Image 1 (cartoon, rainbow, N blue to C red):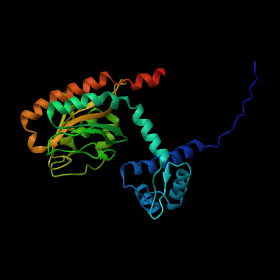
Image 2 (spheres, rainbow, N blue to C red):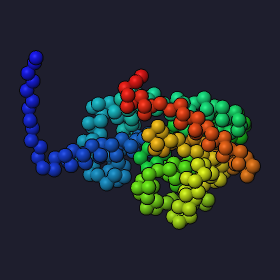
Image 3 (cartoon, rainbow, N blue to C red):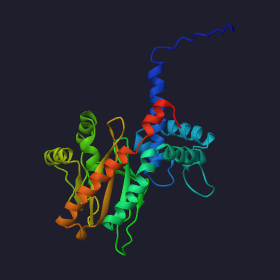
Image 4 (cartoon, helix red, strand yellow):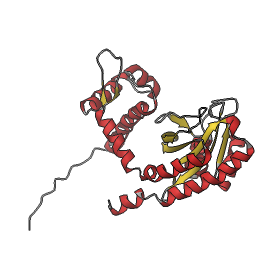
Length: 274
């Protein structure tokens, strides 16, 4: 039997809080790269996060040393590095909902003739993770990896409707930006709509995020019972007639349920399977 000695270290009062704050700053800097322009400089990050340039510079240099960020000769600012790309690829491989969604969304595209999408919840926003483009000449396509607010568009609203009350209230307590003239920015009206979405399990948008786009979305509920994203059918608004929307409601709701049944990532992460 081997004896092991353990060294006890006293932690200074408040040290845990300082460490947590520092980690949060690093995370905030990285999240700016996830949804912003390809290159970001010290001044832009400092303004956006309200952190001093000296602190931002130290964070950036630390991330560069670990290849999470990188710089290019002749380019102003920093970009995501190879380590960040590797982390992103690993996350996508582990996001089994994406694997489960692929055949379902392909079939949904064939059934509707419209583009189908998969969105993931990131903080209090969402990003498109995948899309299967319509075969039609006039169609809608989306920007993968770009962050969007939850209050505008069906993919965001359906996530917002199914969030835990505390997180939903945090989103609704902030100013609601109008992305188009059809974006619902009145808090009372939006709350009423979210209640209807939660009851029906489907959200509809006609020009709320993009003026000429229509979409119908359903939530992706994980094995833990929480909403982790959404799927949608989207296309030119003029094709989203009341009859088409009614048909898409049922198709999208059934597709989301099928994906949920095939979703095993949480079970595997808990049991260590795979």
